[in-house]
Length: 205
Figure (cartoon, one colour):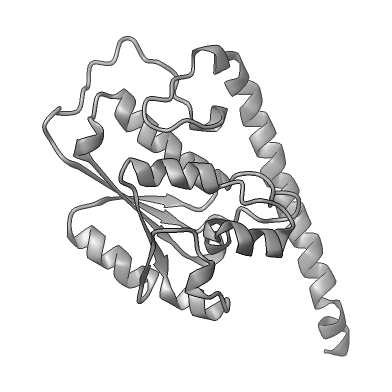
């Protein structure tokens, strides 16, 4: 038992590093497929990296109803601050931006697009304000621009109060205009009951 205790943290670090490397390799593989399309990528709602862009589709025949209000709910748990990633945007936030751009590219007007991001687990670290993020990771928060753009087009950010307390983070350390719920589970129930379509943003997309 003593051996297990003494070696638990090094083993966790090894597994974490292996997982991070696997994620990086998968992203590099995806980049090879995406790179040829960079010149034609469109950003109809939110600007960002190639990961937030949309490839134009000229022959789409299944078109959303123009006057319908579409409700999108993003369950964000993806950790954007693993080893070597703290100075890069959270890939989960980039995926959310891409999904929003996809809906806008399909012809849905921003006024008819209602979006909520429920932030919990390690994703909370990506919505720290500049001072708190820099203190923790020695770099500016690389997610600030994406969050700011999302909020400008009406995206509503809700943080899990349980995660906040468990991680010992003060509400004053959060990025501006982040709302706090009793828990992510209750917030998910609230918006799913109201008819929002849910997207799990955990890294497996």
